Structure formats: C-alpha cells, structure tokens
Image (cartoon, rainbow, N blue to C red):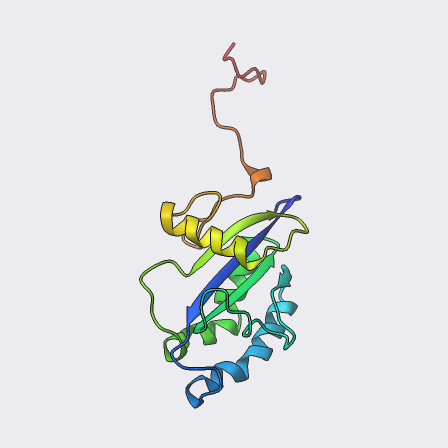
Length: 166
C-alpha cells in the first residue's frame, strides 16, 4: 500500500433516458444506498457530489452523460467495492439504463494523498487512456500500475548494492 498516493477513478455513462423517467427509476432509487455502501467501504476516501448528495447534476461530458468520480486507498479497495459488494448487482443491470460504448468510459490513476481531482483532470485522464492505452498515468482494472512510490528499480545489482556490477 502506498504511503503517499491514493487511487482516483472516473467512469462515465450515457443514459438511455432522462433520470426522471420510469426507465431510470430503479437506478435513481439505488443511488443513495449505493453511495452509502461506497462511503462505508474499506478504503473509500472521497467522492464527487452535488448539493443533492450524488453527482447526477454534474454533467461535464454532456447532458445525457452521468459521471462518477471518487478516490480510494488502493486498487484492491476499489475492486472489492465494485465487484464484490452489493454494487455488483447494479453493474449487472447497467444495460437497462446506459448505452454501450466502444471507447473507454472508465479510468484509474494515482493522485497525491489528499488531492481531490476535478472533472477536468478526470476528462484529461480518460483522454490519455483512449489515446495511449493503459500507462502508469491512466490505466484500467485489467491493467493496473503501482503507485509511483511503489515502483521498484530494474537493473543489474550486485550483492553489495553497487549498481555498476562490480
């Protein structure tokens, strides 16, 4: 676990219908319980929210695009919440509420401990992922990278610690 970095994540989703329609009613009804579940999860640090307690009114990617931006202690904590908690039931139903997209809609990246990313930073990281694929600056659950303070040097080292090989 990193002593100096936390994991930021953003995911965006194109709604099939406006939030106030019957098609989106179950999604809207589950916002508060799922947000509470996240906040109670081990490793949760912070999430973007508006005056209503969620981020549904924040639409930097377009009027029909919802954004979820949060910070976690590490990849393991976020993975546990996303794929091993009651949140997974919402994931199973996402096709009911959101359009499929051919390009990346979620990205993970390391931020200095205490930093709270804004949507402009998140959009930049998503663009980096779309342009270059997973890198230490912008990555996915499928291909994660260690926090910068966990990187290990690679190279020839002698038993004495002298990296010149002698």
